[in-house]
Length: 297
Image 1: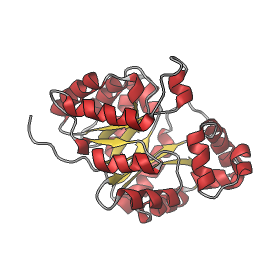
Image 2 (image 1 turned 90 degrees about the vertical axis):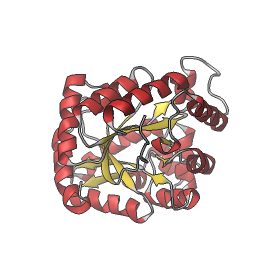
Image 3 (image 1 turned 60 degrees about the vertical axis):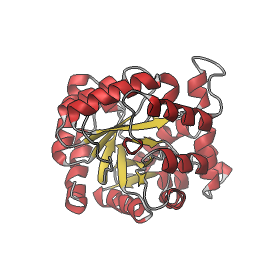
Image 4 (image 1 turned 45 degrees about the horizontal axis):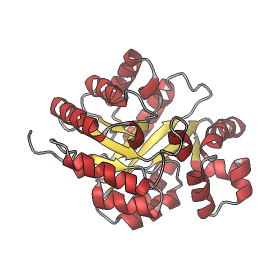
């Protein structure tokens, strides 16, 4: 296999569960348009199942955009099989697959097998060891780790190409950059709602956030970031406004700028609407037009 190049998306990308769990034909069409709109990376989540098949579907549909797992759940995929599939996809698609890896949440992992989730930092280290030991290893700069805490961020700098933090505020991006140092990739996810109606936007954001803030990982991060227990318990307007960028295109651009100013290399936008099943093509087109002028997407 030819020498690889580091995978370092810049500018703005799209983070979408639709591209992972939607009809493969429709998602391929959407990915092709997102590629034409100039988004530099497409990120998809994972809760088990054929996530690498979804990656392949998106790679086949695009020509330039990097495809990334945001993130592959390490408890649900054998590292030897992941490494082998990585090698196949890399050979077929010219180094456009960025492997994001995460430890998920205990409640999610233990739902199928109680007690499976334990020592997440050690589990991540062991998983990376197995990727390194594969016949065709996954290069460290072709993988990023889901990380918002200092220990996992340090591991992201030491054993991967960088970090992909989820559900954070720009100040958390600044803290992450300080821990990572100047070299590693920092690519946070940013949730957005394209609506000028404050009540509508906050209602959409609050419903989305309530599920995540039930997990101690995210709740504790917000408490550490200066929000009160009441903010977290009620998913207050203040907390919604901090975690979800809402308004017109200019409002979204301002939030992207805040992350970039805080040290991010790339920002992955997750668009929320009132319909979780429908591809937000209209919103993606609006953002592509607005962001392309500013970031060259």
